[in-house]
Length: 391
Image (cartoon, rainbow, N blue to C red):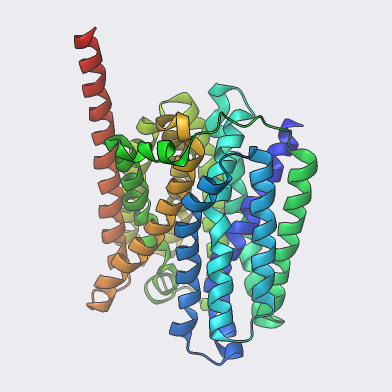
């Protein structure tokens, strides 16, 4: 029962990961069919990210008085319905709205799902359970996104979203039949729940997410031209190299969960972001060497996604009285990292510094996450010292 319940959450993660990232692969197909430019089609990616940022705190705030299982079921039904709108989109405006709506359940599902996963196992295995849920997202990078891109190119991008809808329906059934009933926490008035945002530590954790993991997106957003123009790979090889990155993400996600269980989440986060910074600096140097680049694509993908369970557990433990709200807001911060990393990573390219330059930006962002992690550790030591002095 326990294994099935975590698999149900992972299937949902797979569907969410697929709908979020597959748009990047089918962008030209969508643009051509809707008779718009590729930059206009790029707005659909931004609309989804905006939906995540808006939906995460609002939906969890509204659903706070319901049981976690009912919340997850409702979120996945909404996910399925909103993605089905994309299948029938016939104009830029319709597609823009459907992508905005599709993003609304994303952060709330991962936020609530992370809390649920941590409750389904003994405390010492909580981060590994969270990693199990996020494994769906990483497996989407290996299977779902390449499949969706292939279908979008060779059949129709509308069939790509039909696959996403099918995954959503499977998730609804899996949650209904595999997820045990979980007692809801004592309802907390929204005004009281929002008091967690008065804490310095919570804002530091959100900054770790938005800045530190932004280093990954600074690299990954421009990985295709890096592989073709700098490493010299044929364009047909790119999809397979991205699958290699997905394998690294899957391995790293599992590793990150185990590290966060063995050490404290904040120490694991600082260590893993340090390694990601080193990886990005290494890519800056070895990018023209193909065999070394293949190795670093796997390793960097691993360290990048190894941070997900540790940061999520860090947030959950820091706001226990309102953990679902805090966990969901952290998912919004991940999407801010996506936007910030891609934007900042593109600046040196636009200035003419080439496709290896985003790695320096990414390494700086990841190291910024390390500094913020150290700040959290220092804040906790100061707080503990004050408690001892008062005692």
